[in-house]
Length: 86
Image 1 (cartoon, rainbow, N blue to C red):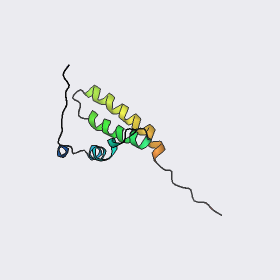
Image 2 (tube, rainbow, N blue to C red):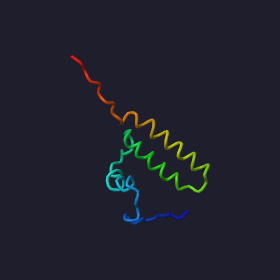
Image 3 (tube, rainbow, N blue to C red):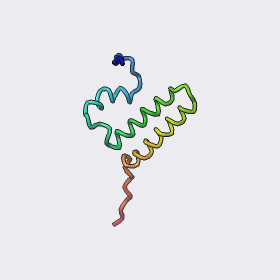
Image 4 (cartoon, rainbow, N blue to C red):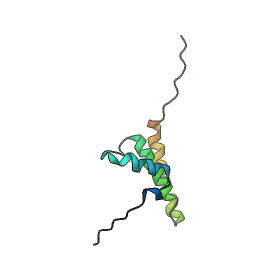
């Protein structure tokens, strides 16, 4: 089997999430385990799913991505503090 390596010019990437991850995210081998990282991965997956040619497959990939985003964003979003009355 041939080892296939593709090199993409950094300037060819226009997705802001992917640009940030290329610059900051993948340097840490443990990256991706935190809920905020899972949300970022879900957003990337959703964006990549929109580029699939098969509409049924596109729908499945985007459903999975939305589930990942929904489940992990709950722990990322801070609830507003309720005012206290003394």
